[in-house]
Length: 168
Image (tube, rainbow, N blue to C red):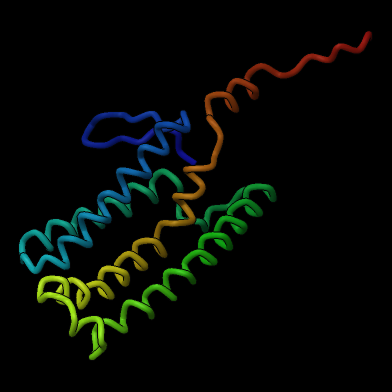
């Protein structure tokens, strides 16, 4: 995992956990803008939000990796476990997608609500689908970035080896 990230000529330090968590929040805020841009129907807003989505994907892959990098056995096990946890959670998003798709057809709820709410309910399955796509592409890397301990502490331990208190 990279501890530094360069964006528009500015170097961002991602070694502290708080910086990585803020990075993940910004990435998912970008995905929310992408989903709103697609669903808004505005041609140029959807185009620019799609570009923002690609930039978010590239930034996340540059920092956390794609999951196909090599490593020692502990790193491979950690990545496999994170992919397992992420994809298990995505199954719940699929269930939510199936539930929201019910609003697209004739149903008693859509007939009873006002036209703006009906329009929102009809767009809801598309929003959930785009959220599913964004989560499928990024959730394992986001989990790794979110849960990894501070890397500054790990680097300090590697630089200063522990001394033994046993008499020699």
